[in-house]
Image 1 (tube, rainbow, N blue to C red):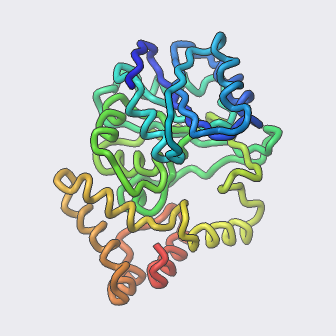
Image 2: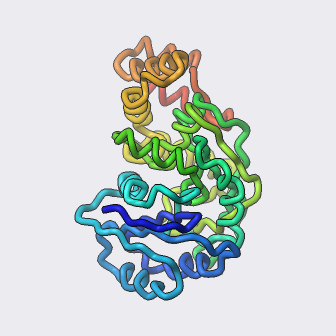
Image 3: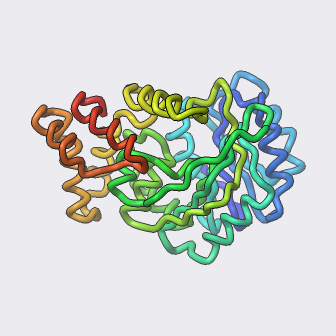
Amino acid sequence: MHIENTAQVAVLLATYNGAKYLSDFLDSLCHQSFKDFCVYVRDDGSTDETLEIIQSYASKLNLHLLRSSARLGPAKGFLQIMREADTRHSCYLLADQDDFWYEDKIQRAFLALADQRDKVLLYCSRLEYVDKDLQHIGFSRTPRVFTFENALVENVATGCTVGISQRLCAEVVASEPFDVIMHDWWLYMYCTAFGQIIYDPNASIKYRQHSNNAIGAATSRWDDFYRRWVRFRKREGGVHRLSLQSKAFLECYRERLRPEYCEVIERLTKGTHSLVGRIGLAMRPPVYRQRRMDTLLLRCLFLLGRY
């Protein structure tokens, strides 16, 4: 299915049992200073009042509810919305159902991307951590670098702050990516390999921390270390299984990737089958994370083969 729409900006929203906070998010869209946008919504089989809430905003927002016949999960769900959205929008903004956007969120992303639709660009911003009642907790860290060697092992482009150019959207959905941990991570990898990152150091959304949110904001240095270690050593979702995602990326884009990028991925994937390879990765890692502590933890995971 392909829906035609001529709005400048497309907001892409994937929902699943989001009734608790969805109205807050949709209200924040209604109060945007930039009005020339539409919202594509794909629901992943909600059993609560999510669909009823969405339909109640039909008179307030330019909504397009996409048909869905199977559960896809968040990564494949967002990629499916990207495929079905009209190809003529200037830019495409990813949205989470439980966050709250600042009034100028869409305008800032649009100004960064609108005149560059033929370039491979990804816009992302800092975010404000809030509790379930939208009360301030803190702000996310500002990334130091945006490189392919970082993108393979860490995503710093938080999906709910991300906007992408028309060309980036078209190129990614044309390649049918697989083994994607998360859609926003794949987009970050793609842009560090073939395009450019535009980072906004000012927060653009209120990012809820609640019981259904797996990230959470650490409250102390030890808490920060412990949370990261727990996330790193798991095998489902998050940073783990990044070797499979890197391998999938290489298989998708080998002919276009720079030779040194291919070499980095090959070192990562070969290490999963060889103790010698893992020791080499731990001693001289070809990749790094934003924080030195995280890179140290990554070296440990290389030795353990948990990546």
